[in-house]
Length: 226
Image (cartoon, rainbow, N blue to C red; front, side, top):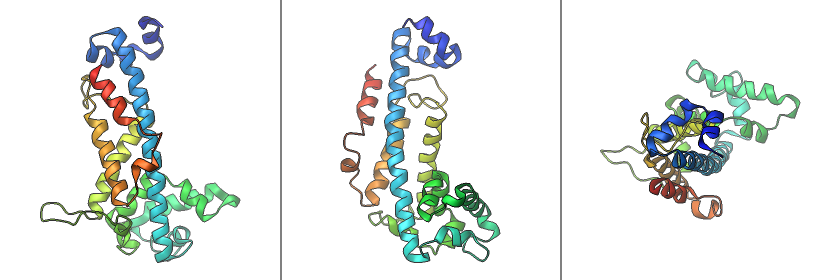
């Protein structure tokens, strides 16, 4: 396809960053396609991480709070039934209503999004479930005077993953310096490193889990050398 045709389809506004970054219409099309491949690869890694995270949280809280800890927690008198956890209750009850007669606890776990599970480490939700959820990261480093590897640290790391997840989902590029038309893979690599680190803290062999699925670094290298 000629660049003029490609640009007509994708829009001048969308492609301007790519042409500015590469100073070549041919390379601009290549970079656009590489960005899509990188987005696909990284989104796959994020999806695997999300499943592992929610399953670990669910398993831990079932042991601590019972088999229906989500539904019970959002019910009147439940652990989330307070003003500080208002939106957690709303999210749970909305998901239950959506499932309707198909409700099971497992389906409810799958229905709740990444943002919901991230907020299990926010201070109010972390407190509501007993302040024990950090145990799903048995290989987490010990806190130091400089860095506290506490629930807020985990929450902030998950927020960063959620941000890039949403960026990919909204078809925004991840191959540039943030806010600049400059080709760069640091943003993608940094978030990829966070995900791998959290996998390791959960005592999950991420290389074995993602075997055949993870080509993030390969595509980053291709973008860097373009």
